[in-house]
Length: 87
Picture 1 (tube, rainbow, N blue to C red):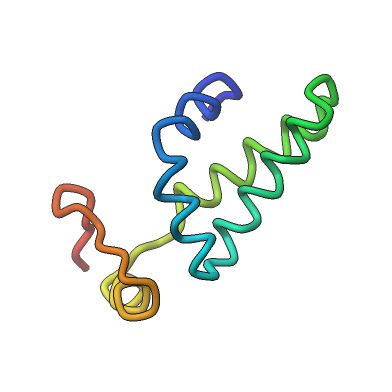
Picture 2 (cartoon, helix red, strand yellow):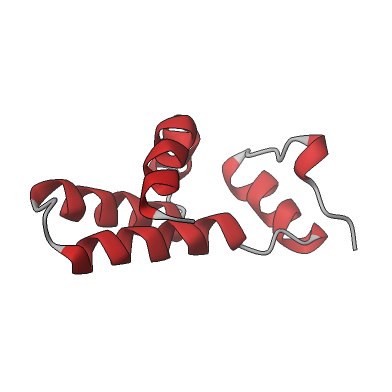
């Protein structure tokens, strides 16, 4: 994702990310911290790159059946049916 795409993606997915972060999901917490760091210094290109990288990691997290079950059991998070990848 580009920086602009990342900004819009964060706006769209912010509530779900926040909910997972409150429940202890480490990648969601890392994404929120990267976002806060970026907000504090918007002109730092390194922080922009970090935000995009962490958002990309969050988006690409491999949600196999096992991982999906762990997320559902641990956090009560259900992946929408159209986004599930069955292996």
